[in-house]
Amino acid sequence: MIQAPKYKNIKESVMLDIRSGKLQPGDKLPVRTELMEIYDTTRATVDKALSELVDERILMASRRAGTFVASQKQLNRIALIAYVGKQPHGQIFLRFNYQDMYGSLQYLLEGRPVEIFTPDAVTAHPELLESFQFILSNPLNEKQLDTLRGALKSKPTIIPLNRPFEGYSFVSTDHRRASQEVTGLFLEQLPPDSEFIYLDAAFPDPYVGSVLELRKNGFIDACAEHRRFYRLVKAGLEGHLDYIADISELKKLNLSKTAKTCIISPSKCFTGAVLRFLHESGLTLDKDVYYADFDNYSSQMDTGYAITSVLEDFTGIAKAAVDMIDSNTGEARFIPYYIVNNPFSKRG
Image (tube, rainbow, N blue to C red; front, side, top):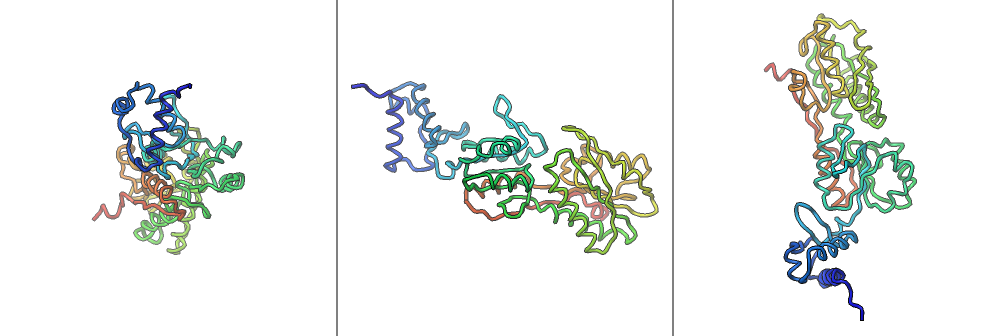
C-alpha cells in the first residue's frame, strides 16, 4: 500500500479540524515551529501543506499576522482596476497622486485574494474579471464602466473609487458639492463687482474628465445661487507624468488691482503657474486676487503660500470601500471633505 505524502496528511488533518468545527473561520493556526512538533516533520513539509491550503483559499496568510482559517469575506476575490503596476518586489507603483487610497487598500486587503489590472487589459479582455466577486475601479469613465458591466456574464459588484457614477455602488468625494462650497466661501465675502474665473481644464489623461466636469458644475451652481456672473477660462496640462500647466488664456486677461478677482482651479497642478503669473503681474494673493484649488495638502511647503484648498479623504475612501465589501451592502456613499486655509478667517 502506497503511503500518502506527509504534507497531504497535514492538509487532511487541518481540513478535518475545520469540518468538525474545532477550527472556526477567523481562527489562527499555530506558528510553523509548533506545527512541526505536532506533525513531527520539517518546515518545508508544513510550508507545502499550508501553501496549498492558501492557494485553495481554505486558509489565508498574512506576513504580519500569521495564517488563519478563511472567512467568507476573505474568500471573495477582488479585482483592482487602476493606473498602477507591480514592481518586482511586489510594491504597488502609482501613476497618479492617490498614495493614501491605494496604500490603505493594500494594507486593509492584505492576505485576501486581490489582483491588479490596468484599464487597457480589462477593456480588451473583460473575461479576466469573470471569477471576481468585487471590482474596485478608480480611473474608468462611465462609458467604460457600462461597457465592462455589459461584457461580464457574472454580476460582480463594481465599486468606482472617487468617481460618483449613478447606478453604481460608488465611494467618492462629492466633487460638485465641494466645488460649490469653496466657491461660495469667496462669493459671500468678496464685493459684488468682483470677477469670478474658473480654470476650465483639460488633462492629458481622460479618466479625470468626469471629476473635472463635476467641479466645474459646482462652481457654476454657486455663481447661479448668488446671481453672479462668471467666466470660464480654458487651461490645459502638457506632459505625461510631470505636468506643465498652460494658463496662456488666463494671462491674456487684464487683471488689475482696482477690482477683486477670484480664481477657482479644479486641480493643484495649475497652482504654481498661477502664482508665478500673479507675481509677474504685480498682483498680491489674498488681496488683489483670491485663489482656491483641490488636494493641495502641502501648499505652504511647496509654494510658500497657504492656498485655500479642498482636501479629500482618500484613506476614508479606501476604508469605506472595504467596509462595503465586507458588509456586502451596495449603497453608494460620499466621503467627507475639508476646506482649509480660509483667507477671510485668517484676518480675524
